[in-house]
Image (cartoon, rainbow, N blue to C red):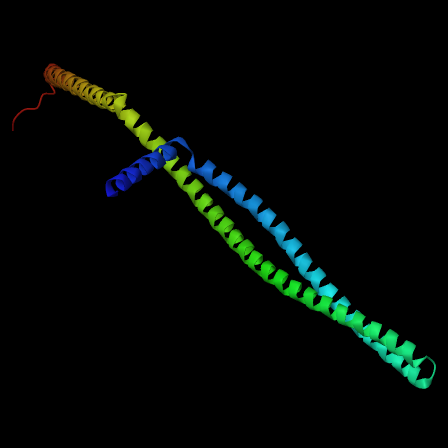
Length: 238
């Protein structure tokens, strides 16, 4: 028996898992809320009808009590008229007896209506409690549905981002970036190498120009001395 029970629970859990995978929890919750709201509308309608029955029973009880009091007053008036001689005693007694019977009947009707009022009031109170509980359940489910929708939004966005990040690596974008980095580094090194070569070329040119300037300066000095000697202006040692 225990083995069969365990097998049944395992099968039940697997069935629930399959249902959870096939059906959308949000749609299921929304449908459940729609069903609860329909039940609430029916319960409110039933509650209104029961409260109307309470009101009718109360009004009927009051009316029957009023009639009973009226018949009692009529019996008193009949006896008073007989006592004054305005009405025959036999006739007054007969009519007064009929009035008292009517009074008793209306009092009985008032008692039954009062009992119905209490019964309907108890049913209305119980139904009202069920309505309040149903309202609380609907409110709780609505809040849970809002939370569930927010969680689904966050989880969907997170899943999308994670999928994109995973696809970036799988599509070779990371390796492409690495190759681009290597190419940029090679281009930078090549540029630096050309810069060094250009600097070296400029240094050789500067040395050549300097040497030429020095040769020109020496020749100018020699020409100046020759001109001074020709003019007899060359300086003599003292």
